[in-house]
Length: 377
Image (cartoon, rainbow, N blue to C red; front, side):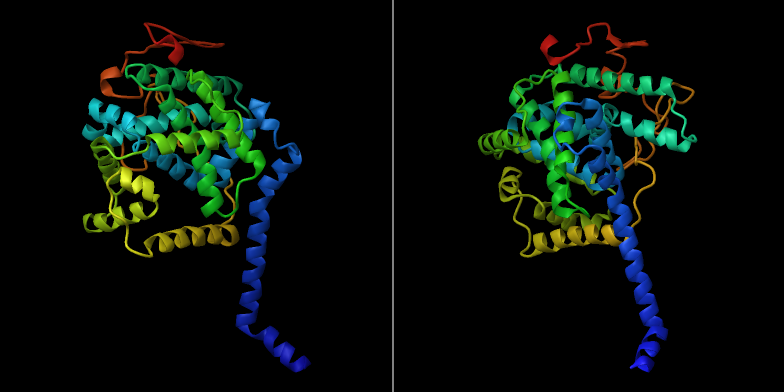
């Protein structure tokens, strides 16, 4: 027996297998270390609902450390889902911003949202890259950037007759879709602490946008969203116009001959209600199962084989360049702001410079008719 055991132990396959199992165990341990530390630090999962500073820390950890890829994908899906509401898609189609330059329109939207939400993670990344020293002046500037982005969003939205219900529906999806995608496809599900942080952060943003009657619990929000979905998600030709250009953008880095299959893949990840609203045919039988299985396999691979991220994945620039612009750390679908952008100029070209912002140490002051909230429109 001892001879057999010794022979097995000396076999290369056994040694490599043991090393592989040890590595998998180590990766899993390291991956859970960050969330376990947060759960010890904040044992009350409802604390983010009462403490916005805590909510930002947890949100930043979730979105830029733990799940940076699916967090962004889920927000893109949330935006895509709103295009199945005719009152939203008709406005987007009428402006012709989406159809004439979908890449810029998408990048502007994403960058404004990131400027509103990435401040905590920018500070963490700067501090880690610069030897642990916190740049207090840049921390204040992060707050200014957040406020300017909110003002800019309000200013841009103020030019269109957008219903409060559509604002709230979009906000609700920003809260719910990340948790849904992460719970279903990522390497671990979200915790109650993280879900409450998502809720708290977006409620804060929503109130700054002047959105009214925001449900204050996840259950209430889910019930409201389901009811709004059932009543307002329906087919309209404008839905197809916006969906088509968006899908073209999503597939722009794939070879042309793969685009028809790519459209089937996207359709496979939509609900029957959404496919109907977008006038999409049903995907081939089994494709949904294949795609969902692939995404779940990705999550398992990350859990056991990919070491945790050392630095938060931040897209917005850590500091302004010599032209007082912020250069994105990477470009997802194409280069729009290769030389950088000013937060107050994000949006359609016709609005560049139309909402000047005055900087003050204590924050910002909108000038020249730039509204401070939807309530001022």
